[in-house]
Length: 388
Image (cartoon, rainbow, N blue to C red; front, side, top):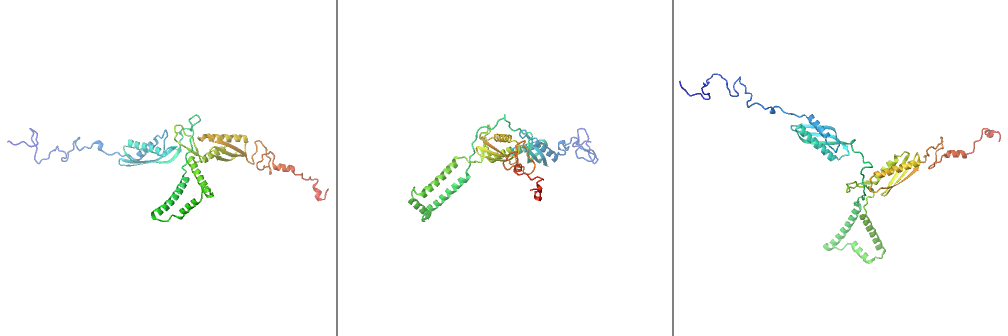
């Protein structure tokens, strides 16, 4: 018996057909079938599960990175930090204490940039917002020491800064503008509106026509105008700002100017003189050329205290860094109760000297020497009927 070969059968092999159950090689077959180990539905290892970065880990990275920011050889002190992770993005924030002195804007930007870069690099997240809050400024123990005598000091002389003269300029400008405005209004009203000239203008013209240069009112008005002109020229030719002292420019920064208020210089001198042992009251008057210091001595050797006050004043003036050194004059007076060292003072009332006295003997002792002696015990019965 002959027939056509079955479809899908291999050459020389009979095909199986009919209702009988058999094995199927197609994927997704009946019960008892399993997918091939390397089938197309197998999930790649890289696609299995997900990676989650905890908020605490990002916060630790942000705090460590903020403390690593280079601030010119110094470091910021991290107080507290927070982090929030939202998918592949993160928001970080830290509270820091910056070393003093430091430029707040520049130092904060360095800390913020370092923190954002390190968080993005180590966590693989994109930093959406990085916030740095400066809580305080702390003294930097590793700061460079102050300049000593052998180091470079400010040199050269600087001029006093120029005053803007706002008040005199405003007064002169307002007065001139008011006079010109009134005169212009009167002239325009006469020529444009055909009005009569104002009485004050016609009166002024008539008065000027009747008075010559030799009259007293004209001379007085000219003198006042001359004084005002001299005053304005003086203001224009002088720098002003008499309350400040120019400081010497630093080497390499000739264009930078700095000034010191005279009241601040007087305060520094007052503190330096008050630190001398025995000095009780200090008064300082600081001018543009010289300084006058008056002090009072409560105890101690007067010449030694005067020399100490003089040395303290000279040292303070030398450390101010002024463009023109100030000349100092020191006066030391003693208090009314001052005594030279080694002077014995008697006890009891009436031993204090009067104001300004510095003698060894007290007025009470002198009064005791001048008084007559009291009557003796033998002479007391005189009032009782005894011997006369």
